[in-house]
Structures are given as C-alpha cells and as structure tokens.
Length: 151
Image (cartoon, rainbow, N blue to C red; front, top):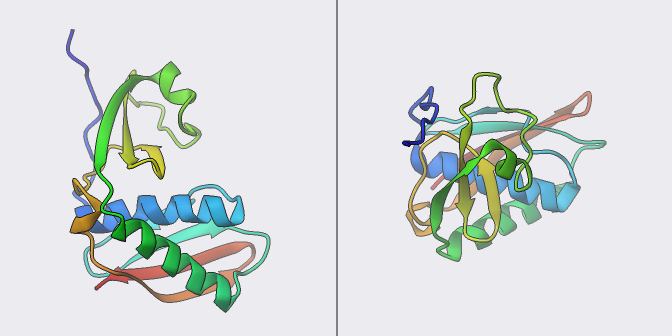
C-alpha cells in the first residue's frame, strides 16, 4: 500500500522555510512558547508571530540570532520521516494539523535539533542556508512578531 500525503499548498523558498523550523525550535527552547502561531515565509524576507508573556529584550534578540546561526553552521542534515498519525503524536505537537490531513504524516527533522509535521519544501542540509538576520521585531498584546531574512 502506497502512503498518501497531503500536497504543499505553497511552494516556499526552501532555505527560508527550513530556517523557520530552526527559529521555531529556538523560540521553544529559549522561551518555552509554542511554535509560531502565524508565519509568512517568502524568499526576500519572512515573519513569524509568537505568543509570549513579555517582549524579548535586545539581548534575547541577539541570542536568538546567534542560536539560529549556530544551528545553521552545524551543517545538519534535513530529512523526512513518514509515520502514522498516532506515531507522529508521540513525536510532535499535532494541534495545528488541519482536519483534512492524511493518515500518514511527514515529519521533517533538522538533525537532532527539530522535528515538525510539515508538507513544505526544505533544503537537504543546513549548509544550504545563508546567514540568518533579524530585520525588525515588535511586541503587542502578547504577540511578538519577528521579521527576518537570509544573507
């Protein structure tokens, strides 16, 4: 029996989308928050929104950049793992999974740093990503929005 997967709804810039995965895991590890609640990923610049109790300090922002770039510099493999929905639930948070998601899920792994159910396109190795740079950020009503690019 062949696995039937949902198709990507948008062709992302692979490097930027993979960077979103790294940024999400960095935010989870640093702030104990969930992955981005909203993301707009484009080739030139992207943005992610996170629910936080307070705005990150400028020191936090610098640390986020440093941590993301350290992961990129590790040249980690980026690969997929096809698993059943029940197995995926023991690996990743499925709360954002759409109702029409297939029974077989695609987990994208960035080395041993991140794992996330995802149907987007990704690089094969973090060595294919440029340098992560935060362009700007703002905080309003518990939502921290960060805008970033790759250089």
